Image (cartoon, rainbow, N blue to C red; front, side):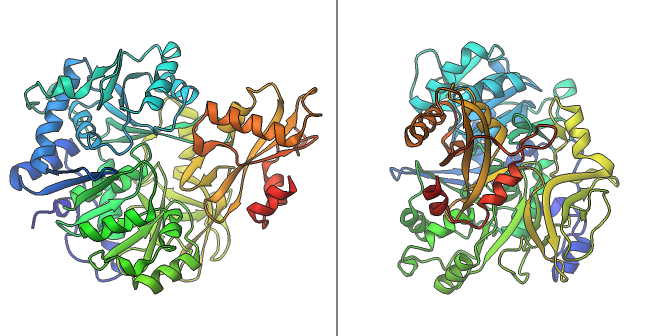
Length: 567
């Protein structure tokens, strides 16, 4: 048996049911655990030909990597990074979409002890400027998309800490060619010792995640973070040893950590990567069938597209597990998928700050729309504003107790923000900010964010960030950004705007086009409002704070098309 997850279980056995799993599944970590040396290199030593990665792009180019390949190339990449002066603690931003080099460069950064920052290729100049300065980014590595690299270049004037721009793929003037340089080097990088060695509580990975009262937060994870995803991969995704797993996610998002590397490799399954420009449902089903994928995870939005295809044309028989996260799964989609394929879809829930917190684990009974039951990795409680447990059926905040020890897979804190970290862990619990309730059988149901975060097509969007962009336009005197219900996306972004004098007499359709274009030119497409409403004044509290909740309540229950017609 080649899977390594056995070494991280306190009690290494098969669990009989959820109650046994919840009570007895416990994780452990060796001293100074480093995913690159202790997982990738160990597989390379003990099972060198074991398949690690199958990569396919839109042109049907195929590359297959063994763990021996990944170990060798990530050592070569670490050597190259160190020659550039990247050292333990340095911040390196990766904007690689689904390029196969991500599975080489991420372990390479772990070898050095540098902090990998995941970033979406949809970021524009202002997004990049904020991130480089907030995190003191030293190097940006991007794939060869001219639009992406142009936005990075425009951000450089106001990004003084960035010393290196590196291109993966085609060469670009003023950029370092990754392949041209690293391929010339030896594939040797001994495990660092002394001060250069990594330790379990050292920072390893960082995500920028949206908030509602400020710019994106910097979520910091340490070197034990991958261990937390054993629960994600083994007991929620239910990956198969020597199988082939696909999680549909771009590497700029935390779902890549959930499903595209850590837990899956620890549990002995290979990764399947489809490096696509856009989702093509028929192509996706064709690949699942052609390559015989054994496990598959995608947001509900993707299942909504897949279920509209003629599923009888595809052989999904080898896929033993379909799972989903990011938003609640519509019961109709679940029922149709089950009817057409005979396969259930297992929901899960978590955050950029965590591994899977709740899920439909193993072969548990599914209640469509529920996020399932708590992971054994976390002491989950539903609390009222006074941090007291609420009765069954009553809504409260989903929290994780940390006063008896910090669990694997949970953030260590928010980088450079002591007060935000203290608030998140106030009272000996981690506050998720999500309101939920539990039914009489312990299934947990999502209600909504305590704050105003917008979830659209699996993306978490900060109203504050979108408002900050819109308010740069002279026509916008005030604005409030909210989410409205959307059958396709879960939520769509709506901007409610008070126009400045001189603009308030212009044609609303003309203003909508102008502001929509402005937003698209200044921030990532997924954040751009799809609905604009122009009002005389915004609802506010006595102290002058905008009441987004009042706007959401007004739009609640209306379908998207009706809202568009009204405005």
